[in-house]
Length: 479
Image 1 (cartoon, rainbow, N blue to C red):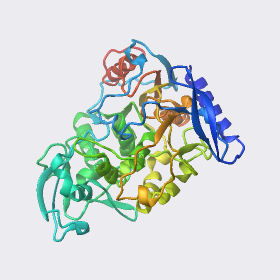
Image 2 (cartoon, rainbow, N blue to C red):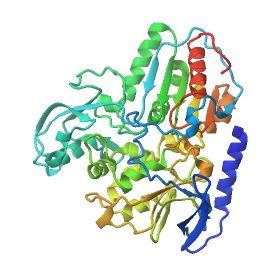
Image 3 (spheres, helix red, strand yellow):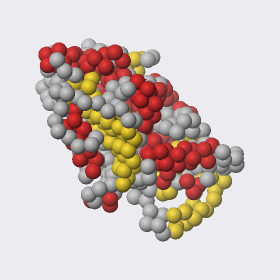
Image 4 (tube, rainbow, N blue to C red):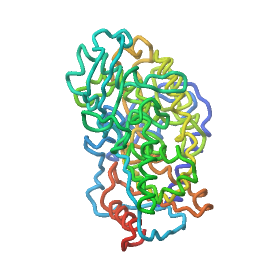
């Protein structure tokens, strides 16, 4: 389907949902089309706003353990049967602006997938933090992430203190006396960027540690490299790194971006976040030696988890007032209601963090105004919401110190199926920049591949190589 037709179909689906008349919440049995095109009968909750239950389908294999499990590159990527084929049906948005890049670029800076960067920490304190006397007052360099089994059991509070963000008003910080560096241990004592990023944070980052603040380090490296080579740099990103790369770009002035950035490449983007990131707060997150319950206690205070929650709005890229994201036994929650949901769960401090994270670059999603090439998949079953029809939220079952039962079910909305990680409105969201880039004479190529999971392969890989050759000033095809 051409991109314009796909966008019109998606917009029509939003319009249909918005026009639904208000109805009381009832329990209904519906007949719906299953994944194998076999008719199945399921029980579904009709929403208070009257959203028809036939715009959702059940994700029969259940939700993944955490919305980012697929994003970090250590788990199997999401594939559909079409991934084994040579070519995909494509939708290609090309704004008609073309550029010859001459002698190429100075350097490439890559923002990789979520949680792909190891974290190394050390700390020295005068007194136990948060009253945790089981934690030593002095800890030399150790690997904070990925976590080892020695960090749990009696030491779980120590791990949680260090991995989470600590909010004070509109600022985020580590515990007092903590130094965190990226990549392998032992860490370094200078402020030279050596790659990677602190994936725990979104656009709002701590300023008390250069490797967590990150963006000034990357900016300095690019300026020095560009001045030495007399060329501009390329920002490359994939998966969860696409939004961190975008946040880096938008932290700089538009003039700085024009002077220093040749192009922005986004592979498997999640520009609108992932519904699945909600699941780590609903049911937990297991990773490496981290058990699901400990992971949940960490995830509720990891800013990037909440940064990725769906943003409320009435445009085609947002989640509108009629669209339920979480169903419970007697109450439904849209994106507008997620702060209230956290209150109902007994997580008021998490609500504060959500509200801090939601009002940032991904909310306004201003165009970067540098040549942009994005490559995304669509048409793969993707989590669109969660159903807990056996109970309601309560602090006794969902508070910060308990482990929820994990009996939620995942649904998918066929018209919004993306790449298995991000929904269509998330993976294709770069299309929102078309008008601004066209008027300014800035390139925008937003290429979609039907049936491609959360990995750029086959035709996508060929198109990506073409763009890379073009940016490097090498012979290339039509891209």
